[in-house]
Image (cartoon, rainbow, N blue to C red):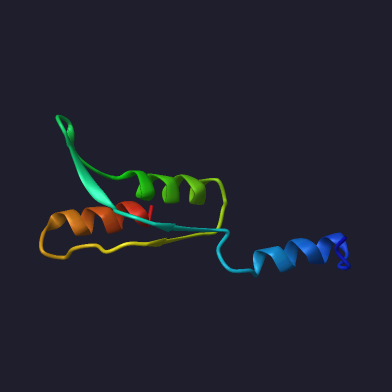
Length: 77
């Protein structure tokens, strides 16, 4: 049982650490219509965030080519 009133329970939940922490790759898939940022962990993180779940993704993104910039731009949408 939670001792906080309902309006304070919601506020307390929103101030907690991320509800989902995802470890894994973010990559660029090459399709006939062009490159698209993806990878299962990246897609999961982006989908959870779109549903309003507080998320953090732990990955490594290269900076040697345009793919890293594409992944970062897609993550910030």
